[in-house]
Length: 184
Ligand code: 5GP
Image (tube, rainbow, N blue to C red; front, top):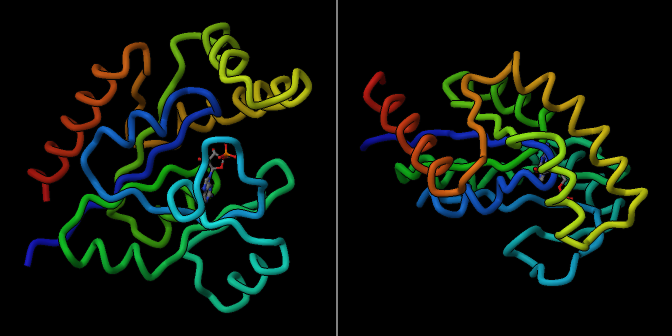
């Protein structure tokens, strides 16, 4: 049977990576996290929400493919569903931060990594402000994190895609997926 493809997508908070990922037509891995649920999010859809202690149990039991602490909260990828979907031949998409991406690449060297860039830092700040989910202080924190992530994105990822216009970013990534499938 045809195997799937692992596609890791990272990018700074507010860059639109979730919106882009949803339009790729693959299966998106649902992460576990200890961060609080945001308005409009749903258990089992955006994340599986846990306490910090529960996250530490998942880590200790080896149930996460990778995990990290980001803004003081745990985020991790449940391993079993990822294996199942790959075996079915699905395009398995991880929308995770840079440290997790490096760990997925270690676990699955054949994984394709794509970093999504904002058109500019100013545009990124506008998107975070318009999202209205974070305080001004949190936005400054996200901007500093973004600068660090972008440096890693430029050097460590297989591909960089600028999200100027969603449809264009989606078709750029689909082209990458097609090219990678052909090469295998
Ligand atoms: P947010 O709190 O905005 O939903 O996510 C914060 C960051 O954590 C984002 O960069 C997101 O992609 C990343 N993230 C979400 N789930 C995971 C995960 O399972 N593992 C890792 N390493 N990062 C994750």
